[in-house]
Amino acid sequence: LILKSSMAISGDECANQATPEEIAEATLRMFEKSVPSEVPGIVFLSGGQSAVQATTNLNAINAKSKGPWTISFSYARALQAPSLAIWKGKKEHLSAAQAEFLKRLRANVKANAGLYTREDEA
Image (cartoon, rainbow, N blue to C red; front, side, top):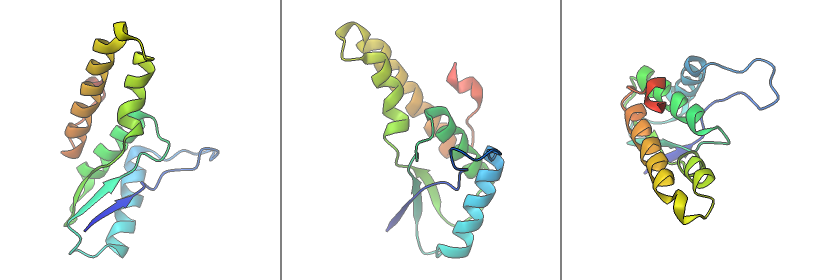
């Protein structure tokens, strides 16, 4: 059993957007209160976040997590959207799009370990 969830993020129209640390604290608090320790893993949807936001928030959650679960990502849009925006269906953009997709994957692998930094976006 793997739980597929969203992060506890602020609504789009909320005047005060939560920081990644606040998102991590709220998300983990919710899991600690409601997810049994027998659940082996929790994966996240990007929930409309940008690619960088989703990665940054995943990193903050994993950096703070002391829970019994493996926490990872299950989002497609936050991985694919930047590459698709580069590719635009044009053969000449394929290499750049592939490089962007690989960058997003590497950034999220680091975020799984709580080791992602903004420098990973360079």
